[in-house]
Length: 282
Ligand SMILES: C[S@@+](CC[C@H](N)C(=O)[O-])C[C@H]1O[C@@H](n2cnc3c(N)ncnc32)[C@H](O)[C@@H]1O
Image (cartoon, rainbow, N blue to C red; front, top):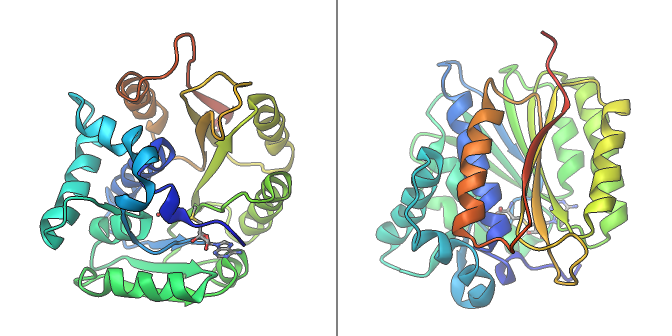
């Protein structure tokens, strides 16, 4: 595996994914009852933007220079600032495990799975000082296999983030679909967020359209697009598929996505979208 998230940390896709993640965590925390937060592809937890300078310039750094109004964007920026204040280092960037732990409560539990032992060790170091009262477990291994073994969770409430590297793009999309179907058979009510790349938008469209035939749950797809769908840059947009989305998430997403589009300077004529693949039963 060649993928190293350190080369992409803080790019526009990370911004989109991490804003959405914090909003989902806040939505689950509206109820007192604790929940399981599970990550199948965790990464190293904290990144140095020196390794991803040009990508971060079009992502987190552009957003930091913009007048953000949506509360979800402000919460996200504040968490990034908190990491930097805490470590006295201005160019650090939090990965999803660090952000999640910063939002979890004593009654919640987190499990992070990472395939590469050196990334898992770095994650352990990154979270060591941060966990407070939150119960955190870091596992080294194959993310989907560990996920299925944890379902259904004893709490009967869970949020899972699935964030694979998509090195074998077609294979990874297929894999996500079959793993979602298997997980939902074991635990149909869990909230699941899947990040996916938008390269040629026609391919992602076909994948999204096929999902409702196999997954009989409410599903939303939100896409932040910065470049035309046939442009030959590596990544034209960032997608978040949400299974069993919390109430009114689509309304909030519409608002922050419109702002992200402006602040991250989407190409003229390029529009993002929030749409239901399957609506909740009335
Ligand atoms: C996109 S990065 C994760 C970034 C992280 N979620 C974040 O937002 O900060 C994908 C990670 O998955 C790991 N990985 C790749 N294949 C895996 C697998 N089969 N199971 C678990 N982790 C895997 C990679 O080593 C990499 O650290």
